[in-house]
Length: 349
Image (cartoon, rainbow, N blue to C red; front, top):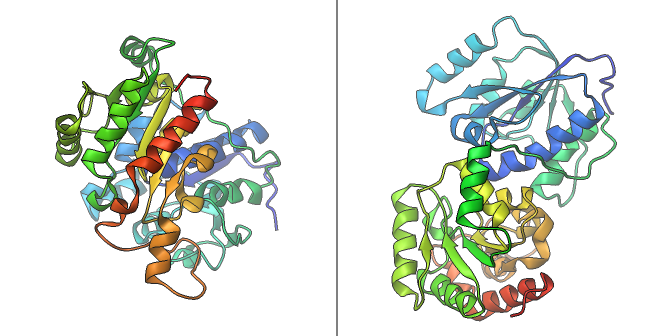
């Protein structure tokens, strides 16, 4: 049953993490804004994710800093003191999100359907979204917009960045430059492709007239992987890993011709900017977590990996396990996909 928000004045969105997921959530919340421009929207969000989205228009953010431990819940309660929302959209299946939701006063509390409302979420909600058999994460999120009467569920994104960050990206990648941006590192090392294979694709791109730039965060894992890629490459590769803020990275991804990445946040950031993404998948089903507008450009060995580990009917969203699954992705398959995407962009390859 859909909720009617025509008389509602305020809504609270609870989605703390991660970068890719909050990118999906932006499409959902902006669909709500198109339908209900009168709504005051408050978003409870993680500290890191806020740095990417803090310039969104028409949204008041409240930061939930999980690094504060149990104090984070009391700080959230203090930040929301005296506020009562017409609707809470509880969009995160995690125990910390379930506990955080107890700090939010809302008449109507929408969560996932029974099959997806885990980690106690069903205990703190009184409405649910429609069940979906095999949803992409973005489609699952759009179910919340549908539950409150939104009709236009087509994903659109507008994530503002400061003008200085746009200038930074335009100076790094001037308009018209053929540029492959590689965001090589995922949050877990096992989801990273092999450095020498990234290097081989980078060399191929350079030979086709592309600049290749490595991008990513300041973590040692990311810096070390970037150094290994540079060392294995035959051509010069520019290294910007650790040199950009999240909004600068977003602007860089907008300027790129093509982005190559595993199952990681920057792949979804690039989607929000309309940049073609070649996603590399082994552990998770790209039908569920792949770059939403570029699912045909994914290079995936997920089906092969999960078939070797499970038999019979495999629940949607089941992850394949193993430290070396990404090695199943061949260099040749990624180069072939790169060539296809490049040709589609009318770039001679």
